[in-house]
Structures are given as structure tokens and as C-alpha cells.
Amino acid sequence: MSKGKFYITTPIYYPSDKLHIGHTYCTVASDAMARYKRMQGYDVMFLTGTDEHGQKIEEKAKAAGVTPKQFVDNIIEGPGGILDLWKLMNISNDRFIRTTDDYHEHAIQRIFRKLYEQGDIYKGAYKGLYCTPCESFWTESQLVDGKCPDCGREVKYAEEEAYFFRLSKYADRIMKLFEEQPDFLEPASRMNEMINNFLKPGLEDLCVSRTSFTWGVPVDFDPGHVVYVWVDALSNYITALGYENDRYDDYDKYWPADVHFVGKEIVRFHSIIWPAMLMALDLPLPKKVYGHGWLLLDGGKMSKSRGNVVDPVILAERYGVDALRFFLLRTFPFGSDGTFSNELLINTINVDLANDLGNLVSRTVSMAVKYFGGTLPETQAADPEKDGELLAMASGLRGRYEAQMEKYQFQNALEEVFRVLDRANKYIDENAPWVLAKDMEANGARLAAVMYDLLETIRICGVLLQPFMPDSCVKIFTQIGAAEELRTWDSAESFGGLPRTVTVEKGAALFPRIDLEKELEALK
Ligand code: MSP
Image (spheres, rainbow, N blue to C red):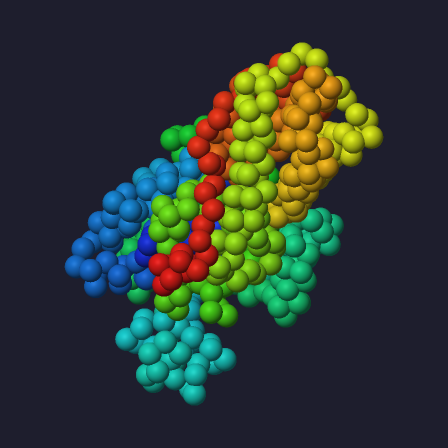
């Protein structure tokens, strides 16, 4: 039976360049959360997509000598494009929205018209300092030495006809939302930033149309204007469910979103502008916006324009998709920035995956084969003193893990699993199966119980690792003889799911150890 619905979104990505590992980070986190909720029994809607309009894309297409649509099609659908990347990374999104999809564009026009007709959007003039070659308005404080911050040329005062959204009208309601629902925006530090930097100084109305370029959704009642890309983009979260269109019919089922995962630099759009738009449309607000941190490289945000990006495809092909997915969520606390390095990646794979997990599985399975021919005997002898701690840790694991996942603390949830795996490794040393095996007549029953406890601990950990490493967990289950029904969420609630006379099957090493020095040299 369904536990209810769970609607989770990633930002929709700009198809202006190939995506890098920073983009992959948020999508993998959303995917792990979606898989976790599905396993728990929720009816999940996991949405991602692409945000395809705007001046930047128009310019890039021009430079490439193609139309904007040809340009974005290639980055999204072409070989090695965004769709290929998500397929490679095993992303289980239920829907993919493109803001150039007809149904979305028409819905945007309806939304814009509705807000205009009810007076939340009005026509005015955009005034400011204008750089003609860059076609951009700047404020005094954005200028560098009085000149355009992008190209360094002279700016001049200019006015342009534009539509505005009455953002200022919603300032009080947004402040109230933050006060009454302190968990609306997490981590808490991001809410303080929004209050101090944007709400307290006062919200100004937002310019929501442009006339200086054409690659956008046209304002249908005023040709020449295209809708501001953020109004277009934010609305994807509801148009993808069927709001103001006939393509889908899930709005009532899934809205409001349970969580929008977004990078910290776009928190303002999601926690102030988006709620204000929804208030104006008289629609419910998302339950939560979670602003995650950035992956940094060489001291700064990894980004194409800084030229310090890491290609997820190279890493996934070298070390495996699951290892990369795991690394991203095991290493960096989701709410904070984290510094990427090849060394950190390889060490994480070696310590956690090759050693603590992979080696535990292969040792355990090998011993079960060596001492019992692969099938444990019926007769087993528990030793409460020696088994108690491991059993208690493994039995309570699911609850501790869930407590962390519910707070989007992936790193801590994985830490809980690895504490149990560490305990299991220690349990092997404490019980020294190789010593027990010397006298099978006297110790065979005890040895079988030790093997069983290890296999069952691995099974429970495997169930909980599935949202992070879906393919590797299937390999684990095959090796330890866990049938389908022993891979479910329910089955990890308590210790003892595997049949006592389980049959194991040796398999290839799950995560081969990497030679750090050699590999760092190769990656250079
Ligand atoms: N198109 C907008 C989002 C519109 S949502 C209605 C956009 N696109 S983006 O492609 O530039 O970025 C998409 C997401 O990737 C953002 O959440 C951004 O924070 C994230 N990241 C981009 N670089 C990143 C890192 N170096 N590290 C972590 N996340 C990063 O913004």
C-alpha cells in the first residue's frame, strides 16, 4: 500500500555547455532520495529537465552558427549529452521537462497573462545603466571602475519598456512564511541569508520581460517581449504536472512539492520569487526548499566559465557509476561546500568500498564456501555475549538511517551503515573463523552462526545502500543469496531475514582496489 506521494525536483539545467560533476552532484542526491522514498513505499514523482531559453543560449547558438533550438537539442539529446549523462549515472527520474516543450511554453503564456490581467504584472520602464555591446542593464554598484563589469566598456543611462511582477506586494507574506515555517528553507543558515540580504533591505518589483533578444517564450499579448527566463524556468515544477496544460494530469496528485533541491546560488529564486509567484497564482507553496552547497575545485566553485570543471563521465567510466555516486554523497555534507579532489575520490573508494564493504563481502562469502561448501548447516550456535552488539547495531540500523535521510543528511545516513560494516569486520577478527574451522566437530555450529550473522548484517546494509549504489547492491545480494523479498525496505526492519541454511555464491570483486599513486598520475 502506498504511504502517500513524494514529489522531488532538481533544478532544470542550462544546456549551454556539457554538464560537470557539480551538476551531477545535485541530480545524484535527488536520485538517491527518490529511490529511498520509492523503497519506503511512497508514490514518487522525481522531476528533472532543462532550462533552455535566454540571451546566453541565443548568443552561444549564434557563435556556433546554428539556431538556438538546434544548439540545445545537441547538448541535451546529442551523443554525450545531458540525457546520456543521466542514463549513465543511473538517474531514475519519472519525468523530464524541456522548457522548449510546446505544452510548457503555452502554459507560461497563460500564467503570464493571468498575472497581468489580475494586476500582479504591470507594464513599466526598466531604467538603469546600459552596456550596448553586452545588451545588459547594470546597477551603479555592479559597475567596475564605472564601466561594464563584463566587457569593461562605457555604460550609458537608458530606459526600456518592460513588464514587472509585483514582488514587493508579497514581501510581508514571505517574511511571515519564514517566521511561521522555519523549516521551509534549509539549512537554517540560508534562511538567515535571505532575511538579512533580501527581505530586510526590502523587495523591489521584478522585471519579468525582455525586448533585447528573442529566444524566449513570447508574451502573447505584446509581441516583442519575451518572458524572463526565471519565470519560465520556475514554473516548470507545476507545468510538468499539467498545470495550465493538457499534456499531463498529475497536478492535484503531486503538488505541492515535498522538496526542491537547489544549489545555494539559486536559493533566492526558489525561496522568495517562486513562493511569491505561487501566492499570486493562489497556489499552495512547496513544503521545503533545500539549498545544498557547491563542489569546489582550486578554491572556487566548479564551473565552466572558471574553467575548473571535472567530467563525471571519465570518472564513472574509470571507477564505476556506483562508486562515483557513493563518493559524492558519502564525502560532502549536503548543506555545505566541499572540495573535490581525485585523491579524496580514490581514498574513499579504497577505504569504504574496496576495504570495508567489498572485502567484507568477499571474505564472508569465501569462508562460507570454504568451510561449508556454500550452504550453511541447520545447526548453529549463538553466543549472546559475542553476537549481541553486532545484532543490536544491525537491527536498529534502518531507524537510524531513516532519521538522517529524512533530514537530507546523506553523509550521516551512510556513516550509520559504515559503522555497522566496521563492526562486522571487527566481529570477524573477534571470532576468528579460521581458528574455529580447525576443529569443525567442536566448533562447526558456532562457525555457522558467525557466518550467518555476517551474511545477515551484509544483507541489511545492502538494502539500505540501494538508493546510493543500486547495481552493486544487486551483485551483493546475488553473492550472499538474498532473494528478491529479502532486498525490500520491510525486510531490513529486523535481523534474521535470510534463511538459516542460506546458499552463497562467489562473485567478482565488487570494488577493486585502486593504486593511488599510479592513478593520480594517469588522471593528470
Ligand atoms: N537553470 C537554472 C535553474 C533553474 S531551476 C528552476 C540553473 N541552471 S544551472 O545549470 O546553472 O545549474 C543547475 C544546478 O547545478 C544549480 O542548482 C547549481 O547550484 C548546480 N551547480 C552548478 N555548479 C555546481 C557546483 N560546482 N557544485 C554544486 N552544484 C552546482 O541554475
